[in-house]
Length: 349
Image 1 (cartoon, rainbow, N blue to C red):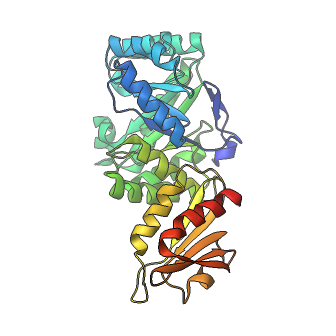
Image 2 (cartoon, rainbow, N blue to C red; image 1 turned 90 degrees about the horizontal axis):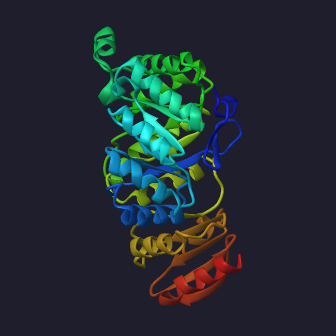
Image 3 (tube, rainbow, N blue to C red; image 1 turned 135 degrees about the horizontal axis):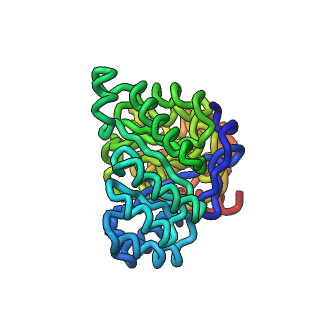
């Protein structure tokens, strides 16, 4: 099922599914009952471009903190629940805009029913999450190991359980750290449901390796028209998840806005500290929402030609460089003046 053929689910003041844009999510790594630290982190994530935030609710203190957190942030707050169905109920009562559960580890059908009843009372969506690391033993036995087919079967079984309880306000997520398995699972799942899909490569790794793995996996899935909201799961500052997610969506043509920095690989012609320069440019434009392509080139021989597809660019020489607009040289500048001049052109563009 293509993303625009899924039905809409409202999470706080945001919508996923249908014609809604793909929203970016992250998860706090603070103690949820530490309200100050959690709010501070969420506000940083908001500034970076996070559109839905999830926090773990392992105990009553965390559940009670949700209402205080929610009153001070500006994006929907999702409660992540494991094992204790009472925490799901408490999270809903304390203002969670959505809850994430795996019905398989919540307990008996009666306990799941209690959670569903509370979600219905408050009209709170339920994200049914199944991970390869927590797949039920009977399904692993059926397929001989963890497989894409097993992930899909497990997720659909749990969705049907909740639907049979008379509740359809659902989002589905099936995740694995294995990229081919995760991609195949989404390809199998998408035609079998109209519920919106939360997509991500779980436990993908550190900022560098995890961003690459997530880009590959999400790229495969999203390019097929599958997925309504995404999270890039990284071991590091959650703000890095937002940066990576925005780049993935932009490079797939699924989101506009933000400055795209392109830079050439270094070679023997490079007469300027291109690596440092490119990194400084990327940092400098990180918070700009204008849709621009900026080129950072290492030599004045091919730089202007290579930068023709960019809106603005700089090309380095020996102690100096060229400032370029739409492939045309504007002026030559000393190396130390290149960055300020480029920033001024970005502001004017």
